[in-house]
Length: 102
Image (cartoon, rainbow, N blue to C red; front, side, top):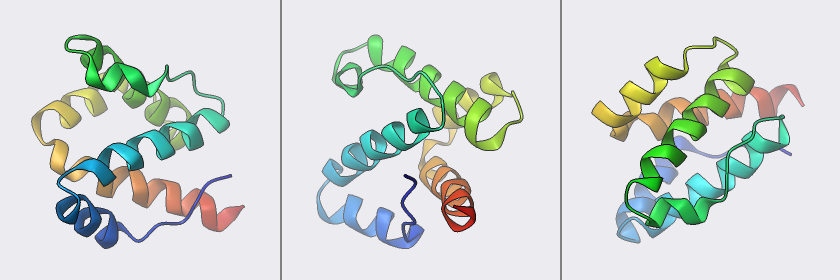
């Protein structure tokens, strides 16, 4: 089940909790994207150096293939690496669209 979240609050809660909510949000959205058929591995990889790059790539792959359905995994991965601050807004916006449909 995809949850409709306020994009502004995702940023506010992330700032208030010094990034802890951002990790919680990433894990929650990973589970939601996996429910659409993606194969994003366990979120424990976020805390392991080098493995977290692999996790971000798989997350972007799941987002690209199952949410955006544009098959531009490399583009989304580069955007996430270079301007990662905008990715929660983009991802949550797309997930909110799906949540409204369901």
